[in-house]
Amino acid sequence: MSVLEASDDAAALELLHELGCTDGLPVVVPTEERVARMALASGLDPSLSLGLMGPAMAECTVELLATAAVMAGCLPDHMPVVLAAATAVLDPRFDLTEMQATTHATTPLVIVNGPARAAAGVHAGFGALGPGHRANASIGRALRLAMINIGGGRSGSSDMALLGHGGKFTMCLAEDEEASPWEPLHVALGHAATSSTVTVMGADAPTSVIGTGQAGTTVYAERLLTSLATAFRSIVSNNAAIRGGQAALALNPDHAHALHSVGLGRADVQRELTDRAVVPADVIDAAAGPSRSGGRDRPCFAEPDDLLVLVAGGTGLYSAAFTTWSTGPHRNRAVTTPVLLDQACALPGSAGP
Amino acid sequence: MRDGIILARSGVPTVALVTSEFTPQGDFVARSSGMPDIPRVELPHPVAGTDDATMATIAAHAADAVIDAWSGR
Image (cartoon, rainbow over all chains, first blue to last red; front, top):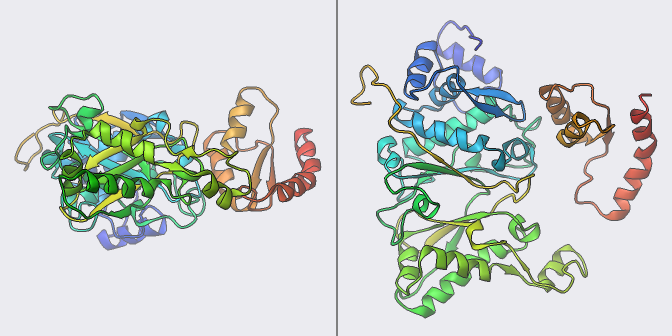
């Protein structure tokens, strides 16, 4: 790894801005000592490569990832989650190289499950995707800085997003497993409840979905399901216009309980929404041209598992739907990766391993 | 560009088609993929999302350049 030199922190920061190594905001200057300490928190050899990160097709080493984590303002406790998130986006099914280059406004939505949520301090409740939560902000930002400085995704020259969205700075949250009426997302995906995972999905900016009514009634549950499905079947989304991709739904705890109270499990909700997320033929024809539908209504999702359902955010009226790019060789599949919490060394000055 | 490089690596004679707005990105991908000199032809931007007639016109104008690039001229 090459080392830059500067007279002081302020000069180093300006140099990093000049070299295009930042996301436009100030970063913590990644001195050798800071990077070494962050790499130590991974419990892995700094020279270990997690794989090639595109479009630069550069080796994503633990040391370079630690550099991004330092720059993003991460604590060493965040590093296992950063490591898992980077491993997940490097999975070929995620299509990171193509996703970095698309004109679409998409970014990895990072969802943390299991004990890693508490270990890293990832917030799941009110404003989990907004400002004010250090782990959420720093972990998502570390992944973005890795995608810039290792993957080479630079706006306008290799990251061709026409406009982008605010989540491209950082978009990380935990599932609120305690407030959820259902098993945690990672358990539904086949992981042990005692394990920790990171799930990444290439996501558009969230669409707010309002839902009001009397919990415990099927009338409200039906209305809520229809409203939620409408967020995906809008013809302006790639899920509706291109189809074949995935999407995510962050239900606020009230909405999740309203659905649970009429006997719906997570899988039931996925199925009900998939059945409702269908674009009528006349809507397709009106948007894409006469006869494009072939007279057939078109489902947004091939199967219920294409819609990830998690519980997050404060209690209230609003849930959030995340439509997706739905393109790439693997249709930009969501990937879930274990977070390895028992690998880290004891760090000088830290409370524990 | 990446599709072109994958095809070229598999032994298929290839010319990568890149729209003008994507030329810097295509050059970056070509360099990072270790094939900086892959033959390429620049098309006007955009192509994707235009109508069939526009694409046919673009194709007609690009055909000679593609054949030249394929022929190493």
